[in-house]
Image 1 (cartoon, rainbow, N blue to C red):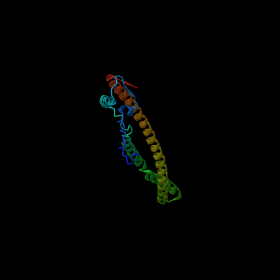
Image 2: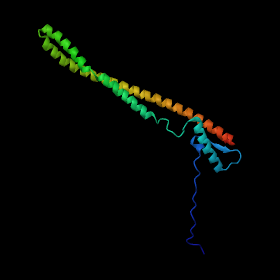
Image 3: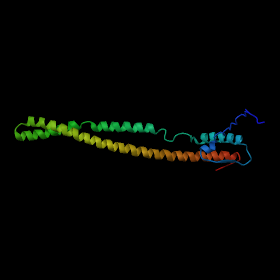
Image 4: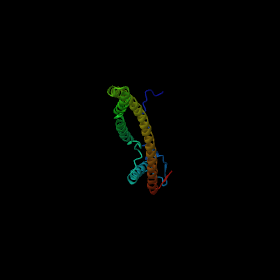
Length: 182
């Protein structure tokens, strides 16, 4: 007779703990038949030792500080634009007044010519200033983007150099504990 209702406990497969070596793209093999538990313990200890020796945190985002740099660059860009925005209308008005006075003097009424020239000059100066501000803003944005790219490249290079030093320190530690590391 077949057994009905037999309940066998489901087997739960326990996943092995993640290997610190795998997190840094390295492979570790025991030379002296160390157990998996001993290997994991040794990897964790060597991982911590490599971090302490090199000062490198391979788990950190290499671009973490970049947002702060972007904020500083944006503040500098805004300050430069504000400096450029000042005085365009006033300079245009003065030039227009001077030109209008000269034309008005020829026509016989320098005062009216100066006033008319000042209004026209202020409008022209404002338009020229807006145009110059737009060009300056585009140039500033391009400079900020180029600076950001250079900084990202430098941070990535520094991070990769740090990872290399970290891997060498980890490998030396594991080698001293009789593991083959690749």
